[in-house]
Structures are given as C-alpha cells and as structure tokens.
Image: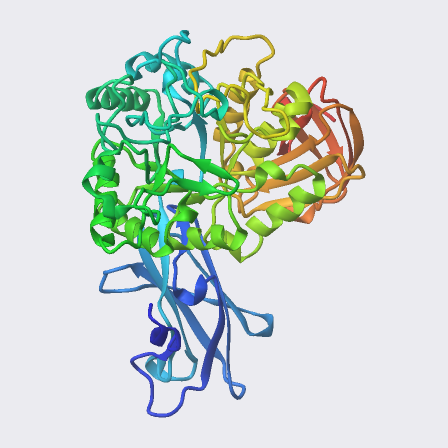
Length: 595
C-alpha cells in the first residue's frame, strides 16, 4: 500500500449516492501500520474485527465484515453486531493458509440495495500453518551428537539422536549452519584467537573452498546424507529447521568471485564483522546496499530456495536486524509466493521497535526477551505487552530457555530447579518455545566467568554429551511436551490471564480455549532455592465458574487432584520437590468422587 492509498482507507462502496456519505467507519482493529503490513493468524484461528461505526441523525445502521483470499473475484461476508457506544464487532475463521484480505461495509438500514454504503479500505491478513504459532523446538549441533571428542559426528551418525528427541515430544529440530567452515582466522575453544590442529571452528563462519551456503560440511557428509537426515527426522515426527546466516568466512567462494558484495577498508581489505569492542575476524558481513545489490539479493534468495527444494520449510534467521528491512520484506514475500508454508524465525536480540518491525516485514516468529524476564513483575508486564496489546496482531514470540550464546545467571546459579522453572514458564507462557540441548535437559550450568557464554561452548569445539547422566530433567521435558499437545489452550497466546498471588515469589496464570472447554491453570515458584506459599485469587467469571460451586484441579505434573471452591485458594511449592503446578481445571469430579 503506497502513501496515497493510506489516505483513502475509507471509501464509498460502488453503490454510493451522489451526495457525501452519512456513515463513518473509524478506529478499525486490528490493522498493522495503517494497513501497510498484514495481521497474522494461523489456519483455523478466528479473526475478530471491531470498529467504531456511526452516522449523523438517528437512523439505524447495518454493517458487514467482508473477506476473501487475495485474488478471488467474490467476497464472503458476515454480519457485524452493534455494541454500546457505536462499537461494532464481526468475526470470521480462515480455514486454510494463504494471503487474505478483509474490509468493512456499512449503510443506513432504510436504504434499499445498500444505497449510500461506505466501505473501509481493504486490509491484508496472512494465514500460516499452525507450526508458525505452536511448536516445541530442539536445537542440536549434529557434530556433537556422538561420543568422540576427537572427531565430529556425521549426519548419518547423528540420526541416532532422533529417537530420543522425538520421545521427548519436540516438533522442530533446529540445526545450526551445516555448511563448510572457513579456516582463516578460525576461532578456537571459548572463542580464543589461538587454534590448534583439529579445532573445528564456528559453524557461523560459513564457506571454504569446499563450498558456501549451498553445500554441506564434508565432515557432516553429503547433500544426500542431509536429505537422509531430514527424511529420518520426518519419520520420527520432527520437522528440521535450518539456520540461515547471511555472512561469510574469508574463505567463502563469494569473497573471491564477488568482492563487490562486501564492505572494504580504505586499504582495500575486506572488513570483518564488528560489535565494538568485539571483533569477529572469522566473519565477513555482506554489503546489502552495494552497487551490485540486486545480484546479491537474488543469490541469497536462490540459497533459500535451494534448501526449500531439499525439503526445508523452516528457517531460523541469524541477526536479521543487521540487514535492510526492505530485503527481508522482498525475500520473504518472494519465497512465500511459491512456498506459502515456509516459516521464518527472526533471531533478533535488538531494540524492541526493530524487533517489532521485522515481525511486520514478514517473519513468522521472533526470539524474545524472555531469557531476561525472571521476576514476577517482569514476566507479567512483558507478556501482557506481547499478548494483550496490538503487538499480538503481528509478533509471535518463540521462548527459548537458553541458546548456545545465552546461559542466563538464573540457570548458572539456580541448580536443577532453575531449569525446571524456566522449562515450565517457557512451555506454558509460550505457544512456541525452544531449548538448546542437550545442555538444557542435562542442566549444564558452567559459564565463562562474568558472562552468559557457556564454558567450552559447542560453537567452537566438539562436545560429547552423556544424555543419560543423572540429575537430568528429560522426563520433565517429555511430560511437559505431552501436556502441551493434549491441551488446546496451550496452543495460542492471547488468552493468557495473570492472577494475584499473596507471595511475590509465586506466579499464577491461566490459558483457555474460547469456549472454555479446556482451561489450564499454572502456578510457578520463581525462587529455585526456597519453598513459598500463598493464596491465589482467581477471576471465576472469566473461567466460567460459579462463586459457590466446588471445582476440581488436576495437577498434570503429579497426577494429584484437588477440590477448590471460590476465588481464593492456597498453593505451596517446594523447588526441591517440584517448583510448579500445571493444573487442568475440571468442573466435574474425577470418577464420581465426592470432594
């Protein structure tokens, strides 16, 4: 939509009489950036549209909500309902993914054939498949999937980890870059500039004489091995997501073949990546605004399409905030015009407005600040902003508990209960969440002193993980993922509600389906070291409960049943036992039992 179109959002319908319209449509919700970008939903998710609609005089109005797949000749429509203060509300449910559009039309009821009708400007809606909103992600370095520290594991060998990951209930298996790694300025263990023979380097330093972004590292195998891995994962119910990092090592073929695609220093040398005071000598950033930018953009799109044609439909995009907005808008829309089921996750730990604009540009999901929200107030304020304000119309957070770059102090110091707490929060606050494993399920808490960097990070060296090590939380992860799949209320975000609790260390919230057929109530102790107790104050009308009737809560973690009555109920959580309840609220009694 161009600037002139933005001023024409409210236009007379074709049946407009040759007099100024009496009907006004304004304050339409939702719309994103005045219609510049689409509202987001997934297939089967309702879109509710509200607007202020009024006219001069005392005539009665009629209004409809109209919608269609973009390109269809005819519109479907549903009647809008009038509410107090000239607010009108309408709903429709797109059943299939695609690019939709919607508009509103209103007229004075006594006008035949909708004479004098006014139509609002057409607004865009993108509908994606459910995985764009709901899913549990597992990040794994395939080269560390074996038992040897002397050599990396191949993709064929890494397939041995698939049954365990699938058994834990994950939906998406995310792989860091699988491409050849450069040798020039290769980083050693713990990001050291000193390397030794056998140091594998960072997978994000992409490119060597063996190939670039459309190749597989020889130590991982061949493209055929990659295809086999993807098929084997799919056979276990796992969809593979691939890291897409648009940057190059000094040894990437692009550096030799297209030097004009890079930034250069005054002395003519290619400029390495910098984030002062840090320098990344093993990475060259691309110049997206070079004189030959069109060829570069087309080449990068071809890279994405190359992996799509090998079965990849999910991409985790590295540092998108360091590339132009217009590039992502162009790339994502171009890819989805051929493969609309493609999902893009933005790894953009940057300023909030930049994160939001990238989401508007087309990214399906975004990393979030969840990692740094650990107190009750921080969590309530942050998730209220994400889910209960207009941000929810275009931004879907993916709550990663940890990443290869981020081991928060809470996990470093909180022991096993801290990992459980962050798991329960991520998996129930977010419809999409992820863990970097096996570090997370094994409660790996060793960090480089004074930082959030893992000690002996897999980014720079091969690790060997004993996945059966005692003290792990694999069974908790498995149980939580099963709970997520069995409770539809956990598949969306915007029906999250927080409840007061008489302890600042206890957090309580619910998620519900629109018809209240599934209600999940969560209570979490945010202190990994001490037990806490308090009284939860529920909003019974929101949960469809009568004030004087008892109701049952079934703890899906312990399988215990509790009989509650009224809005105020007692909870006590000991992190040494289990720091959370995940209740399923039941209006009847289990097995006909009496409370």
